[in-house]
Structures are given as C-alpha cells and as structure tokens.
Length: 279
Length: 238
Image (cartoon, rainbow over all chains, first blue to last red; front, side, top):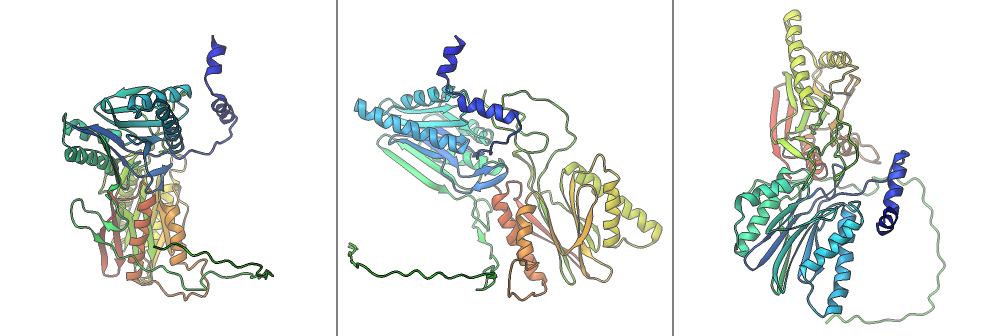
C-alpha cells in the first residue's frame, strides 16, 4: 500500500532537498512574490486583480512583475507564493488546456483548469508553493476559484490570496454586493489591492486588473500606478515630482588600469544589400 | 484554513510561507521594527536623517514614528532596530545628560555623549540593546561630527554613516558621492549643506524603492550653530 503510494507521488527531488538541508547544506532561496491577489464575480463576468511587487527576503527584486497569467483566451490566473512555481504551473496547465481544447473542439471550461491545477498541486504534496486565484467565463457563466498549494480549492464569489490577503479581504467583506456593475467591481478590486499594497510590506508598486466577460478580456496593466519613484504620492491629490540631483559621471571618472587592443584582420568577401520594407 | 498565524520568526526574517515541520516555541525578548538612519558631517553642520516607518513582520505599526531624537542643542541621535530598546536607551541618555548638567554645570559635548553611550551599551554586553545608533552633531570647534555605533558599544568618528535595514544600500552610494571613492580625476569639493540635503533625500527615495522596511516619510534634522532645523519629506507608502 505504501509502496504504490510512493510511486504515484513524484517526490524524489523534494526528498533529496529535505535530506541535504538536514546535513546543513543551504539550498538557494527561491524568490517569493509577497503579494496581494484577488478576484470578484460581478453581473456579466469577473475581475481579477494583483499588485506588482516581487520580493527576495525583505528586498524588492522586481518592482513591476506580472502576476496575472494567461491560461486560455477566456481564463486567467493570478499567482502568489514562489514566483517560479506560479509561472511554470500556469504555463503547463495553459499548454495542456490548449491541447485539450483542440481535442474537444470546445472553449475550455474554468472547472477543467481548476481540476488540472489541483491534481498537479496535490501530486506534489505542497512542495510547489503556488497559491492561485483562477477566474474565467465559459459556456456556464463566470467562475472564480482559489487554489491552495496543497491542492484544495474553493469556488466562491470573491477570493483573496497572498501575504496581503487579509487587507484585501477586509475591503471585500465591507463592500461586496451580488450582481455589481463592471465599474463598481473594478473599483472594488482596485481598492482591495490598494489596501494590500499600502498595508502589507510584501506587496507594492502598481495595480494590475483583468476584466473577463463573455467574448471580451480587458488586461489592464497597469490599471493604476499607485507609487511612482520620487513622486510625492499624496492619495488622490496631484503629485508633485521631486527634483532628483544630477549624478551623471563625467567621461574618464572610471579609471582605466590597462588597455589592450587586438586588431582583427578581416577582408570583405561579399557584400549584399537587402532593402527593408518600411511602408 | 487560509494562512499560518506566526509568520515571522525570532530574528525578524519571514519564516517559510507554508512551513509544516516541527516548531520550537521560545519567547524572544527582541523584535525587529525596521527603519533606516543616516548621518552626514559637513564643515559647520551635521545632518541626521531617518525614515518614519515602524514595522513588524509584514505589518506596519506606524507611518509617523521618526527615529531621530534631539539630545542637546548641538546633538541629535538616530536609533533603529528594536523600538522598545530605542525608547529605553534614549530615556537613559536623557537622564544621564540631565545628571551631567546638574553636576558639571554645562551641557555634554557630542564627543562626550558618544563616549558615554559606548559605556552604556557595553554595560549590557551580555543582553544587548538591539539598537543601531548614529550620533550627529557639532564638536567643540563647531565642526560637524558623526559617531556610529554597533549594538554593544564599539564606536568611531565618521564623516558619514548609514545604519538600519537599508544601510547596505545607502552606504556604498555615500562612499561614492561624499567620499569620492572609486572615482578618478574628480575634484574633491567640500560638502555644502544644500547638496548634502539633496543627496540625503535622493538616497532615501532610492532605498524606499527596494527595501520594504523603509518608506512613508523622511525626517531630516539639520544641526548648525543656530540650532536644529527639522524637515519632513514624503516617501513611498507601499
């Protein structure tokens, strides 16, 4: 019984990593995304939102990374947790889903993507650190799922994930209503992500939105540049830019220690000209 | 079901996001509250600057908690690290300054305060104050002075020094722009007050971009023989 279970669970690398760490060897830390991601279902579809900060420990590694991943033309997925895990997992499922869609000659359904994602994550017993918010519109209407790294999923009208999920959920629990209009839903998601950006240290920078309705997807990146460098960001007021000092180096500031020039003796053998079509 | 509660470990670093292994629960007397301080000494002025964000783990306690404390008319101290120890240490320094004034009938000079702080910190060698201190002020000749400390009292006089969470990001830039390190054929102009203040603002704006613990606002204290002037500049709030 145990033997067949182990065969079905592809854990060799994970077991090796655990053993090696016990011996004191340090595996390089994977980059996490800190993150605030969320999704909300409204009257005609759904809105997904995400911040754009990627952290390595407590240092910002990427100030403008994209956390809303493409799964299929009608399905998008936000990812929190280990950056590589969310990126690769969504790409694998996106690829398999496209093949599945061609094979069935039908538009892919969100439940299918959900099933594929949860079965893969469960197979890896939580070692793939991907916490996802999956949303899309298919023949049965709009659907929103939250998927946890160990493989459990919840189908809900509004979800949040990531280190800023509490801040975002506080906004949702206050203002969510059933059957909202698109503009209200966009404003709600924008405010939820903004709550995560300003109150959670793991989230920051800009707000990306993805509005999915039947037959239309609006990928708004960035939807809101909440924090520009050097701009005095007073909420809702006209921002005054700070005049940065001039730090340009004059030519020759970097000392040249040695210089060696190697002449390459080349002779022109053939010369052809191909005009570029600039029309 | 959603999230682990004790997300940050003893040393202030985030624990692994979905850690499920055995955990040894121990009470830690310390906590890391973030923050960055910086001090620059000029010919006849000194600048002590700090951000005003107080954080813990992934949360913000306060957006308006400056880390510069005025000690005398000619000295300002910047303290970052564990906020509890910062408050206690500054209270102890204030008390000692009063005692000195009452017994010696004069205010303590910057150098004297620095030497005293070193002994106060070493007195707690085996249960340290988790504080990174930088003193900025004018010396007896009226020239700018900066003294930087480690948590157990080792100190030295500097021209410029950065301390706290983003110190590793600020210090190299100051080495280049104030110390003219790694530059050739550049005229070593003495630092004037306007350029120094501009540099401090730019350097903190850059630190706020990349360090999550630095942000919200920047408090600059400029110490001259006329007194201490304070300036506040907004920073990123995310």
